[in-house]
Image (cartoon, rainbow, N blue to C red; front, side, top):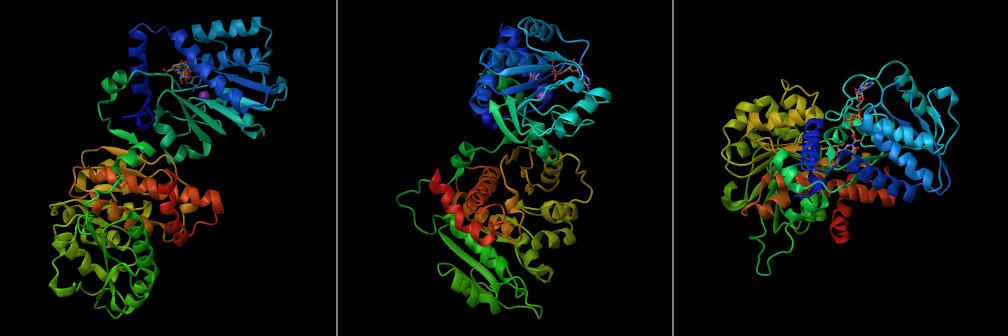
Length: 507
Ligand SMILES: NC(=O)C1=CN([C@@H]2O[C@H](COP(=O)(O)OP(=O)(O)OC[C@H]3O[C@@H](n4cnc5c(N)ncnc54)[C@H](O)[C@@H]3O)[C@@H](O)[C@H]2O)[C@H](O)CC1
Ligand SMILES: [K+]
């Protein structure tokens, strides 16, 4: 476990911090250490000699900000302080007094503030406990209207540490220095517009304290490059053969949505899976063969509407001969019997897109409870609501945990911060993505990629949710890389498939 992987609530952070203090670390020494690390980062970003406004709150977030003010003052910046509170915590008050004694200008009214090039936000950290109102709310709104970049200490002031909800109003930061461990609120979609670029400032919290408070492994985890790489099927065994590297069956496509089948196939191709079979309606077989010459394309009889009417595997091949089945992209709702058939099989199964809509009609929970082996569901928000109309969606992490526990499936809820839960409530959150992926077909690519990865590790001692998390990470990293080279407008789903390999090569 790495610190980058850990996610904490305010209560857990207080508990961990309490253990450090109880063990003898002086509070003031820790504040000094943390704030100097922040000052070092600021010095690396802000050009020498510029004007920096420091926003100081009543608690220890304000204390951090005051140490930063003092450091930047001595390092040659033109610093002023905005501190509108009448009562400060003791340590904060001492730093305030010392900053004043150094001649750093202090202001209480926003009308008096001189201009500056950068703002540092130390109004509130994880101690914010109620809505921000009155003059402080007005001040925050005022700073948000300035054009200067804002650096927030720990989290943008005004965000709830656990849910990321805006409590009244909140600072819109350009950059957030999260202290010690990632706060849960920073991984919530509603917080994203306030955080800017997020960075962890590691101040050497002992792992033993983290384990004591969160358990080992912790229940809620952040996907990182390290965790993702641990699950990639690399290096391959020198004596592997194609069937040992997994046999994935994709069931996808229709006359109407032929492209979805191609994209799913190209996602699977990038996974490195040993054998790829793709079941499609017979009329689109030639198209699939031309795009995926290495795959075995299984032509199935089709309905009048051009959907697969029933699975016709060559030579009476049983479904059980496949390591994994991924089913859904482009099927249309006319493929209901096929979805029922694969759900009744005992092969590990990924259900996506139309397969999820069909599952919702069949009755999500009652249908899945019958399954004896792994199922992975990959809904976006709309599909999630259709599958689980009774689950409260306010907290996405709780929603995905509930869905997984009710169905016994691993559930991946797509979004700007994709969340994955296993039935026991172990959660992975994908911390990095790009709006470039908000395009038709990018989900099909994920289905194929995930199927291919699962097929390669299905017989090994791995947790399914870890592999699902790796697929989500790989997919989003490909989107990020493609957007860097081609802008956020340049990442169509086909292009995305071409960047999957580049992510692995770049590692
Ligand atoms: N976690 C660590 O190991 C370290 C944390 N540091 C910093 O300390 C803050 C947390 O400090 P704390 O004093 O507990 O809380 P805050 O500074 O966030 O502010 C609490 C302060 O504000 C008052 N308050 C709460 N809500 C409101 C409101 N809506 N309006 C007005 N006032 C409000 C409350 O009564 C308190 O007085 C953490 O984020 C880090 O930045 C350390 O310095 C280093 C180690
Ligand atoms: K803050």
